[in-house]
Length: 141
Image (cartoon, rainbow, N blue to C red):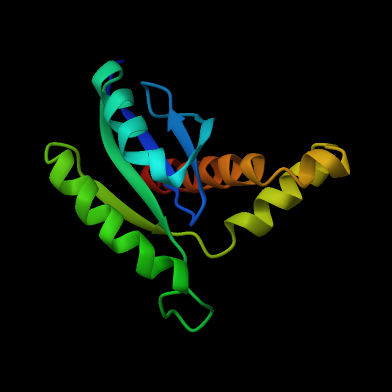
């Protein structure tokens, strides 16, 4: 099988941003880390200098009526900056309406103790992993 670049997913938050990345075959999503949002661009610049990244997926939170949420208004300027900084890497939005709910459910079903479930950084990283896994599965259909 041909080796491809990784797909990187971002669960962008006001304070923290969860990051997940695929394997080079683009089959499996793995949580990578959570970084303070203020350090996100330098983290991404460093990461793509070391790893082949084919595409970046950004979770776009929408309200139930399909309108952009408050956080979505923060994400668009970030994505503009990202596209300028990395013009060779396509950036795509994916709907992430239910990812934090799914992240909490995954933590519960995985048997994580209450203290671990209250770890917001872990929730953000799991949310990014869910965004990426959904994206990877949608590409296989």
